[in-house]
Image (tube, rainbow, N blue to C red):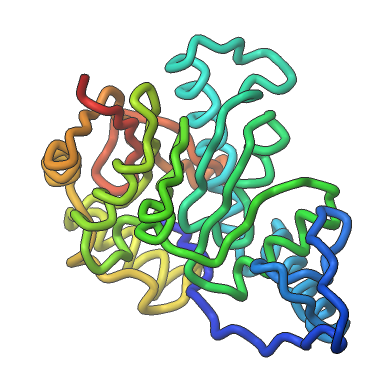
Amino acid sequence: MNPKREPPASSPASAKAPSGKRPRPKTPQDPSQGPQGVTVDAGEIARFSAMAAEWWDPRGKFRPLHKFNPVRLGYIRSQVCAHFGLDESARQPLKGLRLLDIGCGGGLLSEPMTRLGAEVVGADAGEANIKTASVHAAEQDLAIDYRATTAEALAEAGEKFDVILNMEVIEHVADVDAFLAACAAMLKPEGMMICATLNRTLKALGLAVIGAEYVLGWLPRGTHDWRKFITPQEFERHLQRQKLKVNHLTGVSYNPLQDRWFLSGDRDVNYMLVAVPVR
């Protein structure tokens, strides 16, 4: 099962600033700003507040993602701290690190990364997702740099990061090599990229597609194209072409009796890995 983020939605129209007046700068306390700093009206804020409530409702339609989130967060925290020699038990162990959450959706990873001390850029091609995430972050008084953009655009702008989170994205992109090339270009020499995706096995077809989408209804039908799933071996070859190497790989499994996800040696369906630049 791979709880995919909400697909990009069309961008609602933004209200124009009154003639002769400049829009107010965006702050975490001011949710009336769009992701590009464009002032929007109160009706839009109400709409995106409702969407934020859906994204962040652990019993709502994003329940599978909330169930999956603890194991992702634990893995990210432990791997980042190990890589940079940080104290995992510290209140904000990621303080001083610049982190990109590519395909951030409603911010379910961006917010906890910010609370752990990282300077976070959350990027998503869907402007509605970015507005939703921005509103929720403002409600939580969190300063997160959310942008409606792509990995390619960020790379072209010369952005650099200590950590890149590439979680449940790779199986949805049109050009895997181009996407990973953009991500690799943004990694600092001592940086790391953490990825999560689905293996292209019959087991994954049965559990992540037929089971999750058509039997249990955890995800909308058509969320995944099994043909775009990527094996760990294929993923490693893609990374090697970008002068990246895998230094950690783990499976992620689901225990239906405990209703929880956990790290395991079974990589037949879900798996996560850490990639670093080849030195």
